[in-house]
Image 1 (cartoon, one colour):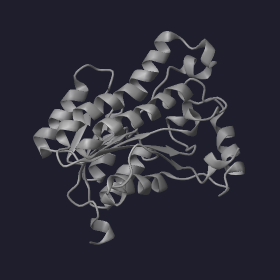
Image 2: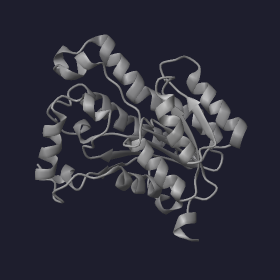
Image 3: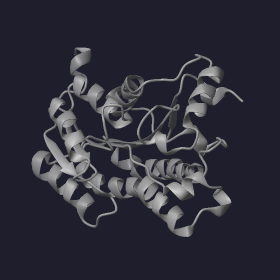
Length: 257
């Protein structure tokens, strides 16, 4: 099989495309290049004009709204996938949110409401999607989500998202154990700091980028295409012996004290 055909016929749902610089789009572009058929979601009517042209350029067979805080929308997306394809081979979950005031403050000062919202959007939504994807993955599959090194180590200004992403990584391990008998593999992908719209909400993010370039063994940050290639490996049969892992794609930054 040619490398360009390695995912031909695979059906995948991409959640979290915001623009051409987003991790979700980098992943989607690589997956499509390798032959996968895609369904792509956009957050709301405001986001649709930015996402729809990107999804159409990828030849997405489904382009659907998905705000995980809107009751019923998640179920509607998976119903549409079932109606269109009758199955799902992989899911890429690349969404996260925390209220700005809570994100910019100390963890000890974060509000209950803010913490609950961050957990619901950034962590529990992945669990909910896994539950909805399970009956569609009749021949096994792969569930992927995006995390960050701040889940494991204290990263300045990452603040409340550190505990939230730590919960997400723990959820990956538990989901992998529970869904393994169905041959559904679950992974967290941990890119280094990237200049995306989501990262722009982190205070002094430019300093975080500069620090990463200075300390990473490769003396650089990665790009969304590099993340996309790792995502493609994880959803392909080449990674059939792996599940429950957090895979770093950060030019080696995570190994440096």
